[in-house]
Amino acid sequence: MPALLAITAPAVATVFAGGGADYQMVPIPIGFEMAAVVIASVTGALTARKQKLDLVGAIALAVFCSLGGGLIRDVILQVGSVYFLDQPLALPSAVITAAVTFMIPSLIEKQDRLIAVLDIFSVGLFAATGADKAYVYGFEPIICVTMGFFTAVGGGMLRDICLGRTPGIFQRSNLYAVAAIAGAIAYVLLADMGIDHIIAVIVCVATTMLLRFISLAYDIKSPADMDIAEAIHRSRRKMRATRPETTTRSPEELEGRRERVQADIERRRHRERRKAALDRLQRHRKARAHRKLDL
Image 1: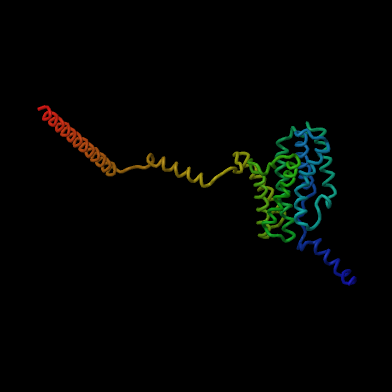
Image 2: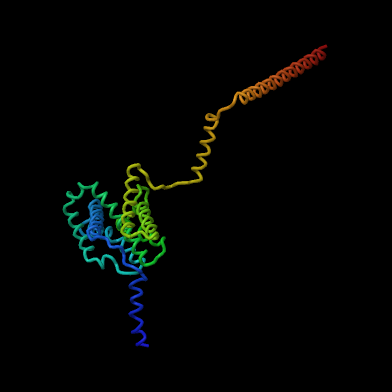
């Protein structure tokens, strides 16, 4: 029995370590990878300053923002390695960025537009890498998209939870989480079609950024507190209210309507004349009855 375990244990360990992957994850240039980590760390540190947190709080929020999404993904999938443990530059980059941003915020806050562009770039890149890892290990497409979503916005969700507030991705706002989901879907579709994974990553990032910028340019926001049935009823009432004004009638229809109105007027006049005659007859009879009594 011990000999059998000694023989089978390496094989079992290999299966769980490899997860059944047929090929390696898509290689992301280290510069882009660290840029995404740095930008996410900057947003976390700036949030810490707005909340009047200390340096430890800034570093913690920066680490959550930059590495929290990947950590959620790795804990759920339980395959391969944990990203920030496997990448030796990830955690130091996040910590150093948080410290610099916390101590010299004036250099960072002036570049708000650049940070916004790079932030959505990092969201798209995280969505692609999250979906790619699940895809490589043979998970279903819906799981791949979900892992892309968690990798992209999970860090911000952890940041808001630590601050004791409702995560921004759950509130009505310009497309952010929706853009990440769309990017992950684009990646999975292209990967299933056999498109090179590098191209799929580029399309994922481009889709995420494009949807985000369109939502900002045209102020498109995710729906909240909506009732489709009530909207349909309002639309029908509006159509009924405007129908008489927009409907055109033929001369024959107008003439027929005029004749019906005229006939209705004549019937009413006839009823009024008959009622008046009956009233006069009633009064005449009462008068004759009084005269007889007098006599």
